[in-house]
Length: 289
Image (tube, rainbow, N blue to C red; front, side, top):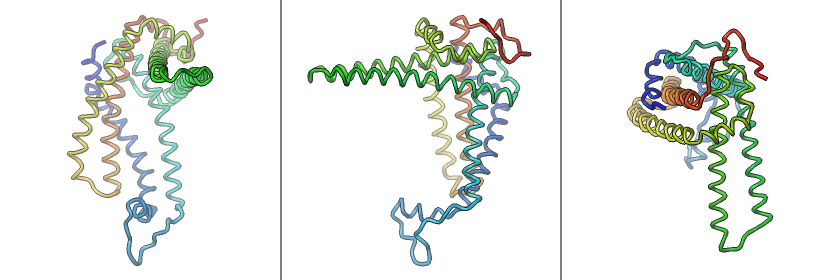
């Protein structure tokens, strides 16, 4: 895997990243603006920080206004839809990179939304399987018990097993995403045990991917902290401009890290032999049985 290529990918496609950021910022700013500016948060702030508002100010929380509730509902809708869409668009990004393109693909909203839902369902399957394994393991430990001198060893071994299992589940999920992108069939992401087997056979590549993902988190985290500190003196209060600026900074760095990660996933998939020879852009799925 080439880390520098993955790191440069969102920078080379910065206009597309910025366009996505602006759409999400406008939607979230409107919702947050309704929540913040149509409700008196002073009593809650005073309660949390032990502030006496003084005479003439009510210390009781007031009921939410209709506009504030509308903002909350809008926030939930935007969060869910944008989450599904981003997951589905990530499949397109992985497919594009696996096909040798360093240009971010065009947005196909309905298809991206549907693909994101399929990917979410597969993620739930991996999560439930991991939870089931942990439940069985801890139930077994609780039933068998262990001598006092062995408690620390047993707990440490359990933690190591949990970390290893979580790593393999994560790699299998990413392999399922890469296969979904390459084959164009959402069922590839649902073949949990086949993807786990591929993750086990390619654990060295998975470990490299994990280390690169950690490096991306550290790099973008440090840069974002510096930018937040620089902008801290320029914003104040909860006005719509401050909210929008905060959302822009948040989304820019998170999306850049996200798309760099998708580039790494595509490289990982290519290296372990996942190919897109069977992908047909005119069809939404295939039956490879």
